[in-house]
Length: 289
Ligand SMILES: NC(=O)c1ccc[n+]([C@@H]2O[C@H](COP(=O)([O-])OP(=O)(O)OC[C@H]3O[C@@H](n4cnc5c(N)ncnc54)[C@H](O)[C@@H]3O)[C@@H](O)[C@H]2O)c1
Image (tube, rainbow, N blue to C red):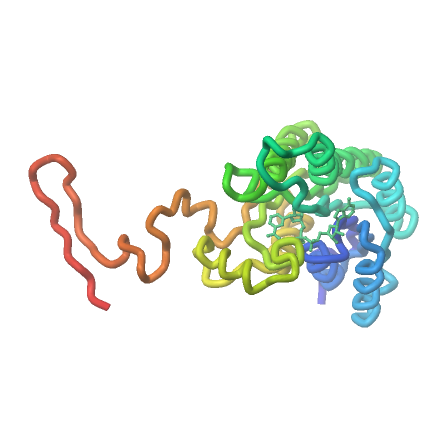
């Protein structure tokens, strides 16, 4: 059967865990060749072992990479062209939580570390992938992981939130410049995705918190993000560029969500019409059940 990414070569950063790993597995299943870059060599080796079990070892490679370092990103992109002859897609996805705590306590080096791993890395990934893609002359797809934390406050620590907003706007800013080269630049903004980064080894505790704010009746998975990444890497999204594609089970659409979405929500226990200060009176009926 023909895969949706047959013959394409992709680099995936942060591919040794979570949504990057799920995307690596999915891209391989769709026929792509994949180079994984990650700082965690142990998880990289474990990921490559799973790929070997799936019979795709000849289409995959792992390179220990620090995405905040320009020589590392250059080497990662070169690994794709050296090993597989070209580059069609880069998924700038590696990430950490970064600086946490009150802004009055945050140290400059903690702020800089957060921006280096989350934002500088995306600049470097776009820069070096675009160079190769322009040279090849037949376009490409650049995808970066932002977050719903970058859409407004309240979705993550302050530095993380600011860095993810930077990822989304760098994506928009660069998309026009690269459009004439047929290079698409998009971001994926995940909501609450059950990965080691989100639950820090305590899935139950985080899931209870997340269930209160996610309208969809389950939390997100790495596969949900991988599915969007396949679409953005494939030719089916040829006319989509400069977008921050939200994959969040409805969190961001809920806005302030003052009344909640659950069965106890006061907004769902009655029906009718309110007429404000008109003096005409309201017409409200309690709903049964
Ligand atoms: N999990 C969520 O709910 C969520 C929500 C929104 C956005 N995100 C973003 O999604 C991306 C993937 O996160 P995840 O949830 O899959 O986390 P994860 O911890 O499971 O995976 C992240 C991977 O990035 C790697 N990494 C971290 N720093 C690196 C560096 N400097 N160089 C190379 N690799 C490095 C880690 O080793 C790890 O393998 C991140 O950018 C994260 O900020 C996650």
